[in-house]
Amino acid sequence: MNKCITFFVLLLGIASLFLEWGSTHTAHVYVITNIMDFVIVFLSLGQLFVEIKKSKHPIIYLKRNAFSIVFLAFFVILFSISKVLQFLGTDVVIIHITGIIVLRNLFILLKIFTRFQKISVFFHNIVNHPAQTIVFSFAMVILTGTLLLVMPFASATGEPISLLDSFFTATSAVCVTGLVVFDTGVQFSFVGQIIILVLIQIGGLSIMLLSFSVIFLFKRSLSLENKLLVSYIVDEEDLGKIKGMALRIILSTFFIEACGAVILFFTMRTPGRSLLFRMYNAVFHAISAFCNAGFSLNGDSLCNLGNSFSLLTIGGLIIFGGIGFSTIFDTRSWIKKKIQTLRGKGKQKTMDTNTVLVLQYTAFLLLAGTLLIYFTEHANTLLPKKVGSQYLHAFFQSITLRTAGFNSIPFDKLATSTLVIMLPFMFIGGASGSAAGGIKVNTIGVIIAYFRAYLKKNDDTIIKDARVEHRVVVHSFLLFFIAICIICFSAFILSLTENQPYIAVLFETVSAFATVGVSTGITASLSFVGKVIIICLMFFGRLGPLTILAAAASGKKKLGYRYPRADIHIG
Image (cartoon, rainbow, N blue to C red; front, side, top):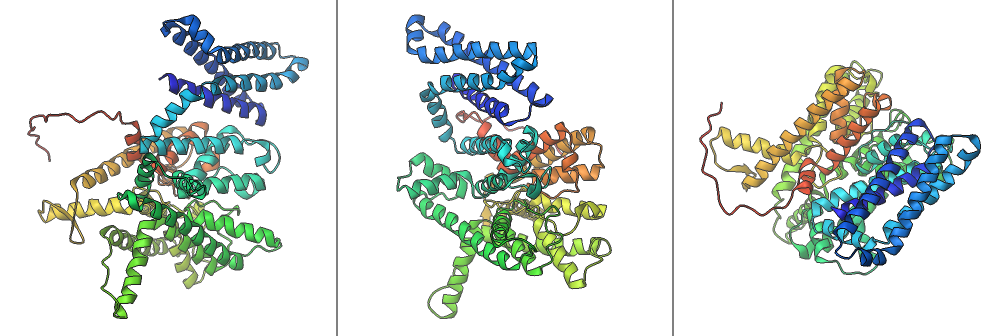
């Protein structure tokens, strides 16, 4: 608990420092920073008194922690001075407050860093738990992105963006959602856009895989804990294959994004723009598409793209990013073996059950989504387009419902029936282990296979002549149930806090939880509570309820006995 408090104070100190230095002093910022200041003082002094009380030799403790105590004393003194100046509130003394606050927070940071060895133990304990590491890593990247986006240099106007909007944007980028409170290409400067792009790449590729690539570049060996963590992320149980699998994922990601950027460079229309902007625009949209982020430099997303080949390229990147690398690698291996078999050079390879499941359900959902969207919108938003273009845009929107977030037709003009049709497609999402969100096609495939087995009175759940473990079936139903509960509860709260039609609120809720990023246009008008709820939904949706539950689990040992069986009547 003591280590957690130290680390929490560290986060508050950094956040308060960035807020005071980089934010406009609005009423919200004033209240937030004052709350942070008093919490820091309370926790720091309380922690010191508790440690002194627990120490068997207080004098020895004070000598060993002299530097830390001195820094804390300076912090308390400067804290008191800054609060007195704020209370006086005259124009003469207000000028000096910011400098005092910055100096004050630097002292608390120095005080905390003198205890860095204790914090490192805290980090070590987290790393030993893969689920906790993933949750913690995503939270830290989101926090870092928030603190960078709130700085003046991230804004196109030089005026700092509000803390909540920066937090919302950073969460949406890291969780590769695409929901935005304002136009990315207008509100953010070039530096701000680069920050968002880096956050998208980190969130899409996975933080720990990027860390692995850094380790590889510096020729350092991978510890057993890190191997277990990467194994948890890439879903590979054979630790001997971890290095090869992770490197293939990283290199394949950059290769696919590069190919997409080259095609978009020659096909995307950017009239009146320089060559460098065309290159940057192509790279930005290629990374955003492959990571299923949905961020665009255009205010209307892709509604005025005007090029079918660009639309298909972005759609292809979304599909590749949404089916997962295990599916991509296995399909490529199957095709290679198929060609060799046709040439009489070997035996045909059988596709993995997971690959067959992902490809079949992906194809079915894409086709079904295309036909349904065309059916409900061919006389509405698709009406001005030619028949061939109507099917193309319906197909593209069917792709983006796999958690991409781009739109080539105005979503604020969609029929209610179309919005209702889109909800289950967004809820399902893409494949496990991909950049996509949702509960995943793998989960739905297992649930459907279970019902099929139940109707046939089979004890085993079978997919492609293979038995699915009972544990996987239970996890699938648990994930489905938790997701439904989270969406229903969040939509209910938003219906109370937002003055919007319920279908728009429900659509926004599902879009956030499934990290899709499409919206009927209500994101920017959300209240403070509404934005916080959407932020939480994006975070939960990207990591997955089961990962967060696993991170929160206490890790107690299993019982050495079983309770008697209960006879419960249902139905």
